[in-house]
Length: 223
Image (cartoon, one colour):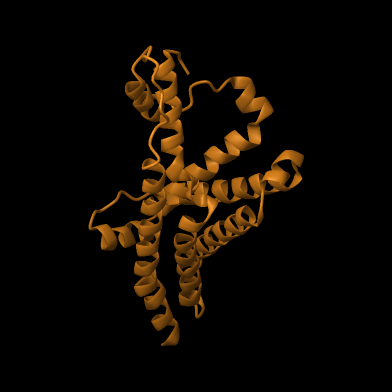
């Protein structure tokens, strides 16, 4: 009975608390940057900075990437990063069990993926994460830029993916509820950790990319 009680706790009160901290922390960090405003620039714009900012965010976020940069110079970063983010985001929202949980939280039914796609995304995300972590640890430049925060975050995400994979493949058994509880507990910890870590970079992505577009529009140049 204790295993069910613990599962109800990590899936209920702890998850709600984690989501509250997540949204409060992310909102604070977002508006703290927004309120800094744009730098003062009294020169007459040569283009439309705001249109270019929206264009950079929505229409052409990858403009300027070259084939050589993606597949030769930084293949692990680009390909591994793409596969990891695609897999992790897809698994977060569109796994049947996760979609059911999101329906309880936000009241919206999300589409679900077939088990084959779930397996492919899980293996690709986990494999990409391991490759990216090893690349950071072995690359002399990235090694200097990587701290304990990145390694801890990667370990936490890897454990979430691994326990989720086990839960998806393990049909019942005496320890099944404990496995689900551990998977949910790790997810709660990740949600709590994001606002205080570099994982919150997704908040600044749109701001930084938008500023690049704004600056390009101000100067009347392309990306």
